[in-house]
Image: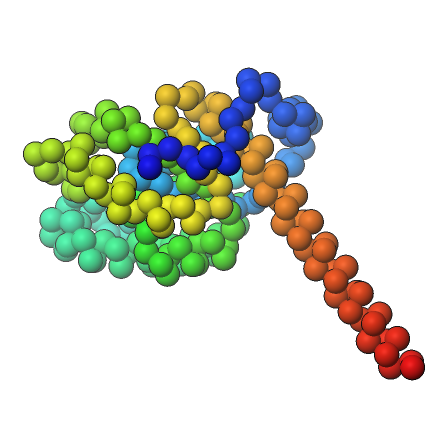
Length: 226
């Protein structure tokens, strides 16, 4: 439940040639110019997102921080004074804004990708990388935070229940990466390599579509000439 799906590749310790070429060429060569990071709280979205934005020379946007700036309150204060429904409405508005950005790495709040409309808008904009970690790792990373959803006598059970509840939505992300017990540099390298693979697949699919359209046009022309 708390780990990336079985088809997720692990780095073998050697950066790919494409990754090395991108880093040492001196040119801004990116697999994508927009990408979002989703996943449960404490999986490393903000930290990894910031480092990924540096590696790709893109702007970094944290949607939770954007909400606090717009509303003028911290997220716990928003939950306490306005309720979770108001916060989720703010998330929806922020998603609409960040999907209009160019050249950005966007770190999403833990619940943002769970909501169907947010998910639809984000996936139609570009790739969504979902980060995974075990409930125990998440508890260790969030133990001293003031996250409203963990204000409970048994936060580990709460994390496990929420992760089970949200897993089906997270599984709809484009790329899945395990952040549990791994250095951030390794995680960023894996994300970039897999974004290159994503770009290749998109290009090949688009090229195949052009070929199919061209073949259909030729067939129509041949039928018209008969």
